[in-house]
Image (cartoon, rainbow, N blue to C red; front, side, top):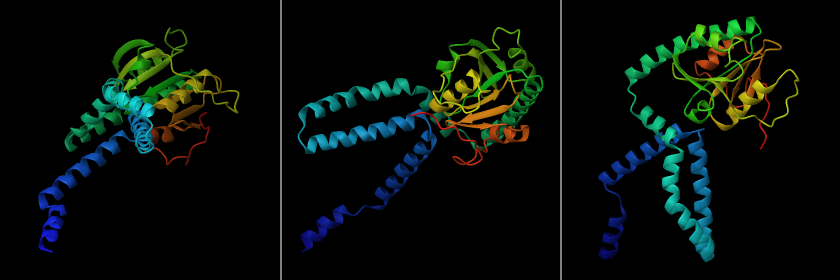
Amino acid sequence: MSSMWEQFRLLLPGWTDLFEIVIVAALAYRILILLQRTRAMQMILGVGLLAGIYFFARILDLPLIRTLLETLFQYGAIAALVVFQPELRAALARLGQSRMLRVFAKLESRQVVGEIVEAVEQLSRTNTGAIIALENEVGLDEYASTGSPVDARVSQEMLNAIFTPLSPLHDGAVIISGDTIKAAGAILPLTQTAFPDRSMGTRHRAALGLSDETDALVIVVSEETARVSVCHAGRMEVGVTLDRLRELLEGTLPEQGKGFRLIPSVG
């Protein structure tokens, strides 16, 4: 009886074990929050599905599937580090941010928001078509590389100059990262969604297409109607006012499906 009790005691975690469990759980939760709604989260879900298939392959003794998945797991980790390097870098950067740095970043972001809102107001007033993509957690380097590098601080004057009809960059998208205009004249992926409004053209298709593939917030100014639209998470809000645009840019995005005129993405 005493030997059974001793074996049972070995299974009980000590205070150091509980301390380690709490630390690991907190880190795992924080990492999942940082990766939420990014391409990395989609990868994690895919790996979980493959792990489930591998588990059943072992139970059912399917040697071919088991061998293929073992090989994939062996080299897939290295490939994932390369493919999702921007997301991992952004997550680590956010982990290292102090509260004071976040306060300064918030003040700076408000200045950027003001410049963007003023530029959009001017573009809408003059019926100048424009598309502006704001980088979030998912990097937009692959799309920025299709345009011309700018590397200039965000300002109303710069944005208006880029989208001037005589400018060689006015047909493409401007990509903004933080307080910097990273590129102009960029080419974005087009959505296959059918728009009910015929006044929506290539700019709207590109904006919705980018929001399907990334977590970027994309602003569109229609050249035909001067309306402002905003795309995020595969959804589009049409006829956005300047006050509403400021709210969206400051990060107060609505809940999924709330406040948006929905144009669901294909697939």
